[in-house]
Length: 321
Image (cartoon, rainbow, N blue to C red; front, side):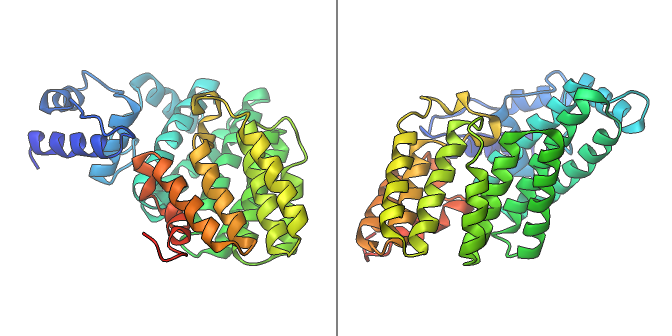
């Protein structure tokens, strides 16, 4: 396609994925600067748009800054040890991939995440001291994300293996945040498989460490309420739901105050979690209304996301649209 045509597709992608549907000014001149290398690292939303339109990773498109690319190549070749900035460059790409998944699907991004996992494995082998722990922590996050991506693809065994490895790496890195996320996602996997006893044990383990950010603690508490409701413990489930609501009231005003991997931990997301609990309690009419409210409050880019499909199904439980 021509430069102006590609720029138009990028511009449309950005507008479609902006929560306020703001128009983008991206045009052929901006694209020309990228092609000439005058701009090597555009904004996150432009990078995500280019990846989405061209079905490629940031690395494929050469959007890693040149100095970071050189640093990464040196670390991968063994000429230098892995450093903090090298790992930061990979983490930035991972954050963009998560956004891209919201706009596409797990199947669209999983190969990119596998490639990142391979890179970070080599970087971890070439790291020392505190950098080693940082690299292993990032490896834990990548395994956790692969475990999550495997679920909508019905790769349940792959999901278990990735999440188990994520927990081991998080323990090695002494990273309570990533350990809690791996355990909570393992609980989610077991909840989807109707393995309620395992889900309850994993959820309890995920909620033990209070050093974890409030967004993830809120997610874990909503999850606990759903597990209890599915187990028929209505009174305990309602207490857990009230506890989750109290935690939600203390969420930061902006998701920017949460880790990059937890940007979705905002009230509209958790309102959907409440709908799952109500459904598990047998209150389908209330669950459907809450699910519709949650979807309406979401950023537009999330409403068609693959992970939002369960909320959409709940919204139709009472026959209303």
